[in-house]
Image (cartoon, rainbow, N blue to C red):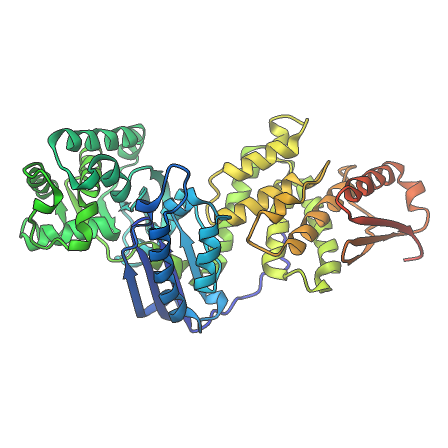
Length: 507
């Protein structure tokens, strides 16, 4: 990546993280001193978002209202926090709902900030970051497990570096709804929940065991709730043991309804999702041969705050993801750099339009230029579509779903016919800004078709839907193929009501 805008970023004194989980919504505010956090406020509400999701991935009216009421309270608390000091992420349930849903738009209105929908792998990275900062450092590998409402993240890492991550489709809400509907408990449903969790885990067991770990650490609501019961019942004083977990499963098996389960230390707001979470954890213990799990108080929201504190590292994470993707698909690095450099020069000329932001917008354009040809490794024909597909569905650490979709859309639009609705459907940035980024990338690719250094860069201006490119005299005669491509580009842009003016003059 070309490091044109790598300036040290200064965060506001107060920073905030909000985690919109499938079971609970969490808000955490902190002051930061150097690389340390001092928590000044936190709030949690059990919204049970996943319980309101229907087969069409729409949230019921009742649960929507419950969620929005919660977010209005969050919004009041963070209204005075600067925008660059706030990160709000949605996990499994909101991944299903989608970033363009009515719910997301209403939620963002209540919060006064944008919501990032993050992938399961990005969730796992942030969870590990939060846990790692909350425990003493040592060089041994550790296994970190977080059971959420709709997914379970399993990470093996060392110090602050996650080495292997998986996001599994099992959680306390989804399993409780699926196997223990209406709170009904029986041995058949317990066994079915356990076997389903084992089947989800089974493809990954051998790899995790091969990598190995010296310490198992659990995080977030389900595991913390189970630990509190284990500790209150004096079954273990240092964590959750395999023996203590089996005692809880036996106690669950002895009742016919979750309301009949009497366990010291159980919170009532956890009762409805306890059975599902317990069976997921039991499968993890058995499948991975865990004998003792320590419990961390830190998880996703702490990871979000530390990610904010280390924005340079966050940018390095995304750049590393792009670099690894380009390497995997054998991208011509020299050509990608030529396109990126031309894109930067065009970007600089248009950055005073007021529609572009140096830091964020240049990063998106830079990454798009670097990986615009990844689909060629599949087939040259329609390679821009192959590239889009890869970028849309790859696990790109550090990227939110909206950032990844923007990247995929820019790459999709870098050649051939243009469908600007792809950009309008992205709510991450204003449409005019995204359109300018797409046009810059298209021109950068055209000007570098010869796969040689572009010697004569046009002077470019943008005025609403008119893009004027001024070339040196006799440029079109000297570079007939480029001129032909630019004329074709005129036609593509005319189809979407954009006027590309090609002008030769003394520049």
